[in-house]
Structures are given as structure tokens and as C-alpha cells.
Length: 376
Ligand code: NAD
Image 1 (tube, protein in one colour):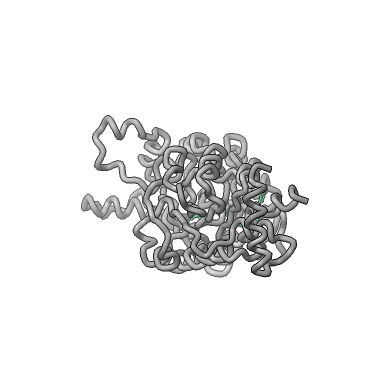
Image 2 (cartoon, rainbow, N blue to C red):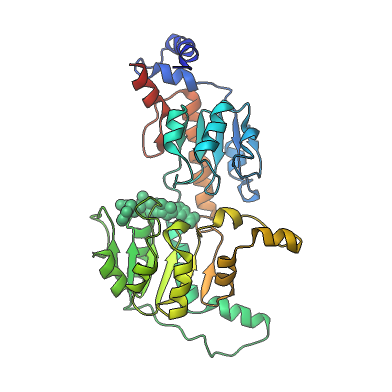
């Protein structure tokens, strides 16, 4: 209601351009050829891709939070990544600074308060898939590294220790992998392990897929029968804390557990208890419940007092365990995936600026839809 005069003025300009009648009010609100984009959490590894695709954007290494939202002042769009914080109050702060679009350089949108974005007239676009096999391959690399003790071997090498005791692994052939979430990434993992390693594949999914190469079973059965459990689910209220004391107790003794999805799927303290008890033989985490305080940062040059302020005791315990492998959300980090992220992000921005109808799997929130319905 407050924005009605602005929207009406822009609508008349849009009609003049012959924009589609139904969505003209909204289209006008976002159509602008000189729209400006502020990129949060910009990393050097994106220099060759994102900076080329969005050459006129403003780049900052700052992570989006309530403290940094003011950087977006004067920009129509913000471009964010997995660990940027776009909770309700941050969305409010962006809206107050005139932001109308959140461009996610990732598929998951659990870090954005989408309802608040819609209320505040902010559209949210994402990259629904970027070379999903890159993430599948990383999950397989983690399980193989843990199974064959590659990290322990490397640690020993540095100390001049070439002994074999403690490095015995298992052949994957004939073992069972449980794929929890059989979407694009989970199906990739299933196919690699079935075709490449001749593993038996079990799957659990809320929406079973016809082209899944394994057998669907209940989650309890999957946990009870699998030698390796690999998680490939989005973070939702339903999946949050899915791997906890109760579900770990249902796992086979000596399970290798891999999480490349979202940290909050796994209760890390419960996983540590599972490692102590031997229920979990090895743990591979590319994501972590508290990763937005840790990942993509370097604490090594801080003085001790500063470092202790951010010290994560749970991560310290995980880091001390030879049967744990943590990678800092790097499963997606391939040239192929970065190219796709940059290409799709730039295309999302272009569509928005051109006032095109937002539709497809890239649309998380089309603020024009609610705005249109409230005006009719
Ligand atoms: P997808 O949407 O193709 O597959 C997700 C699957 O989970 C779907 O089959 C869906 O039916 C299933 N599912 C959803 N809710 C469920 C529930 N409550 N119970 C059971 N099944 C449920 O997604 P994807 O591309 O395979 O990605 C999976 C996840 O991987 C993403 O949500 C994201 O969090 C994560 N991811 C991580 C990285 C990384 O670099 N580590 C990169 C990309 C994606």
C-alpha cells in the first residue's frame, strides 16, 4: 500500500514499453537497464568467472549480515552465497536500502527468509543446479579417502612414518551405500558407486524417482543396512537434525557417514558420540552446523585472545580425530560448477533487469506475484 504510488508510476512506463499486461505493475518495479548489483562474500576463486559475467557489479569480501547490509545502499540487487545471512531482520535492512532482488549463487536458500522477502517486495533467484556431479564426486572422494585412510597416510608421510598399521581399509565392492535424498546429487553418487564400485545401493527419499538406480527403503532400514550413508537433502524444518542420537543408534556398527548437503542435517555432538562408540567408523563433512562462523575465513594470523573468541570446541574435537575429514564447503568447487554459477547468476540478473517474467526452478520468490495479487 505504501509503495503503491511508486509502483503505479513505474507501471505506466512499463505499459508504454508494451510490457505484458498482467505483470506490468511488477515488471515496471524491477525493470531497469542500469540496475546495480552488490556482491557479498566475493572470493578470489570467482575472479575468472563471476567477475567476468557481472563486470559492473560492486564486489566485497564482506559476508552479508545485519552489520554489513548497509553496504548494499544504492544497489537494486545483492548477490550472496551459502553462508551469507539473509534472515528476516537482514531482509528488512536490505529492503530499507532499496534492494529488490536477492541473487543466490547457490541452490539452497535456507539462509534467506523467503517469506519476509516476499512481504518486502524482494524477489529471490537462485542457481538450481550447477554441475551436480561435482558434488557427487566430492562425496565419493570423501568416503574413499576415509575408507583408505588417505589423510592419515599423508600426515604420516610428513613425519617420515611409512608404516602400515592402522591403515587397513575395506573394498567397496559388494558393500552397501545408503543414499539419503535421491535428487540430482544423490543419484550421481548412487550411479558412481553402483557402476564404478559395484556397490549395492539403497535410497530414501520423500519423493521417489523412477530413474534411481538402487532400491528404495525406509530411512530406518537404510541406516540399519548401509556400510556408507551419504546425505543429499535440502535443509528444511523436516530434515534439520535428521542425523541425531536416535538415528545414529539405528546405524550399522562401523558406518562411514558423509554429509555434503547442509551442516544442520547432522547433530555434530551426536556424531562425535557415534565416533567414540564406533557406531560411526568415519565421518566426512563438507558442511558443518556452525560453518558460517568458520568456513572461508583464516584464523591462523589472529592472536590467541581473538582466536579464542571464535574458537569452536566441537570443530576442534572433530579436527583432532584421524577418522574425521572436514572440507570447508568445497564440494561444489570445480571450474565447471563455477562457470555454471556465474552464467546462471548473470542470466538471473539480466532477466530481472529486463523485466522478463520470472519462471522456472531458478525462482524462489517472485515478489511480483504477491504484489500483483494484492493489487487486484
Ligand atoms: P535436489 O533437489 O535435486 O534433491 C533433493 C532431494 O531431497 C529430492 O529428491 C527431494 O525429494 C529430497 N527430499 C527433500 N526433502 C526431503 C525429506 N524431508 N525427506 C526425504 N527426502 C527429501 O537437490 P540436489 O541438487 O541433489 O542437492 C541436494 C543438497 O545438496 C542441496 O539441498 C544442498 O543443500 C546441497 N548442496 C551442497 C553443495 C556443496 O558444495 N556442499 C553444493 C550444492 C548443493
